[in-house]
Each structure stands twice: as structure tokens, then as C-alpha cells.
Image (cartoon, rainbow, N blue to C red):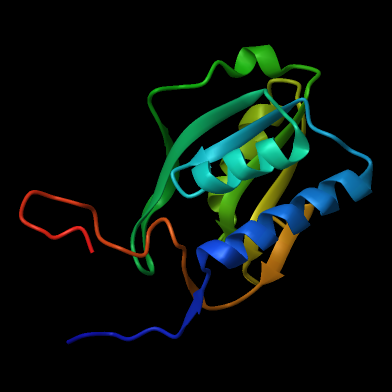
Amino acid sequence: MTVSYEREVLTWDLFGRASRELALQVVDSGWLPDVVVAVARGGLVPGGSLAYALGSKGVGTLNVEFYTDIGRTLDDPRVLPPLMDVDDLGGKRVLVVDDVADSGRTLRLVLDMLTGHGADVRSAVLYTKPRSIVKPEYSWRDTDLWITFPWSALPPVTEDRTVF
């Protein structure tokens, strides 16, 4: 049985606009980050884009696994190696960037980890879902739909598949 989900589709062009609009939200708030931390994997592209838009050269990543498929998660999110040295973030303004605040559990894990190391932490996402336990300070859009992102819309390239 195949389940069909109505989707929010983010194109590369729309992503460019979304990144700039998120950066404007951050600048307009008067709080500029010293470091941008992208939550891998979904937050890698938005995190890099926001770091460039904000002129931040301090960029790091935390790899967190939670979703295993559409609508399927592990019991709890977990940080995977390689680990970023978060001890250096004490007293720094850190912007945590992810693609979506869905349940909010991944963001909560990362925000708590960085706050626990003395960082002044805020979060930015492209999309926020109404059920998220974290309400990011900066969010481009709200949606309750499954989201197709341009960087993950196609299956991985393997030896036995065509590229497009």
C-alpha cells in the first residue's frame, strides 16, 4: 500500500528568497550571532546560506539523527559523531539553524546542549510546524504539511541509478 502525502514544496529559487528573509529577521531583531551552528543534515544548506547572508565566518555543525522516513522517527533524537567542540561556545551568541521545527525535539536537544555550555542561543528554521515544542525565534513559514526540500527531493545517487 502506497501512502500519499500532501506536500509543501520548496524550490531552489524560493529557498534563496527564504534564506534572505530569515537573515533579515535576524538582523532586524538586533541580535547578531557570533557562530552559526547547522543541524545536520537538514540544516546544512540553510545554515550555510544564513551564515553567508549574515556575514558570519564562525560556522559549525551538529549531526543529529531523528527521522528515519516520512513520518517515522527514532524514539529520541541523538547526536552522532563527529562531535563539534561546544566547550568553545560559552558566552557566544549562537544561531542554531535547521530546515524545520517539526516535533521540535531535535532543536530542543541542540538548544539545551549549547545553553548548557554557556552559549546565548537562538534558533532559525525555514518551516515551523504547529506541534513543535520549540518555537524558533526566526522562522520563514508555518506549515502542517510534509516538506520536500530541493536538496533531498531526489534519491541518493548510486551505481545502479541514473542521476536524474
